[in-house]
Image (cartoon, rainbow, N blue to C red):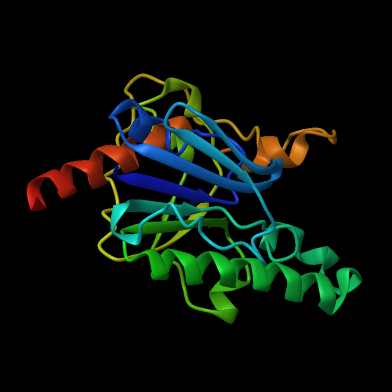
Length: 212
């Protein structure tokens, strides 16, 4: 079965359009229960990406699309004023995790996207291929009318969707930067916009269909 895989992905937002189209989806993240949990065509794997290997049942030829959302805690430019206090260890750990994301996405050989906010990864690796704000895709989800400049590193034929903004909406808000401290703040700030997920599916699935 054709499969999409999302690394460092707690929620199924990025893979939901693919699931609805009949694909199998695999999510890998430390926040999932240890081991594998399968519900229909969705499998969640609880694992540390520094030691994770794809399950034996996942054939490389079945991977149709990959996405990765490595943690940005210690490389995001928004937190630059705290860089010195964090130390080299935390910086190295963040870069290691990003490296694992890049390694596996390239290894799968399928179109891929790696997402991070504006960060020092541009200095340590390469500049992003694309950037967007969630409000760019409100034509797919009106709830995404907010700003959060996001960088994308892509490869293996990934198709960047064209912006699709809904008409007659107010100016995008700044909810991400104004989110109050809480236990769920990190998950809220890193949540994948549903409109972007739909746009990525439409662009890449349509391209695959034409190429088949």
